[in-house]
Length: 247
Image (cartoon, rainbow, N blue to C red; front, side, top):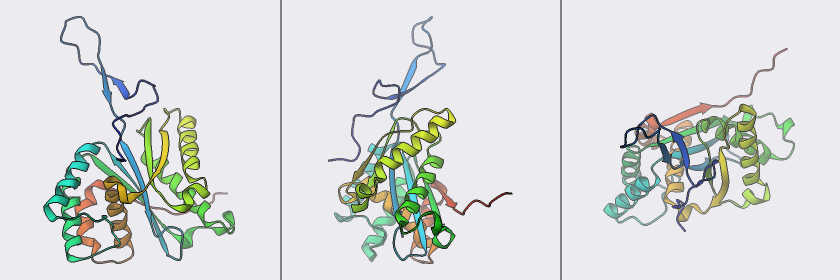
C-alpha cells in the first residue's frame, strides 16, 4: 500500500484543507473563491534513539509535493537499476551515488526537514526512571509541535517499530500535539498518526536519508558531509538542551 493516499483530510471536514483567496472569479461580481489545498504528508524517523548511543536524532520531513517526490525517487531508482531500500546506515559506492542523486532531486521540490539532536547526557533520567522510551516520546512530541505550527489536518507517518504500539507512541503523539494546538488557539494539526513499514515507502526512506545524514555529521561520519551539503538549505537542526531553571 502506498504511503501517500489520494484521499486527504482536514479539520474543516470537507476532505481537503482550504483557505479564502482575494482572487475574484471569472464572472464579475462573484465573491472571493475558496482555494483548496491538500495538507502535507508528514514523515517521522529517528537515528540513535533508544539504545547505547550518545546522541539521538529525531526528524520530521514535511512533504508538500508527495507525488512529485515519489516520481523523482522512482526515476533515480530506474536510472541506477536500484531496487533495494534507501537506508543511510548502509553504504557502498553504488548506494552513495544513488543517495546523492535522490537527495539532489528531492530538494528541488517543496520539502522541509526539522531535525532535533539531543545529547543523552542532557536528559535527566530522574524524570524517566527506568523508562527511556518516555524521554524519547517527549523529545518526539517537542519536535513535532515545533515543526508543525502552520500545519493542520495532516496525517503523520512513523516508521513501524515494535515499541510504537507497546508504548502507545502513536496515540501519545496525536493527543499531545493536538492538545498543544488547542492551547495555542490553532486548528487540529494531526488528523491521524499511523505507523508504516519503511521498506514499503519511498517517502519514509527519504526521511531516513535526511535524519541519518544529520546524525552521521553529528557523530563524525565523514561520508555524510557530502550528503549534508545537498540537504543543508532544506534542513533546520535543533540542538536540544534542557531548559534552565529559574528562581
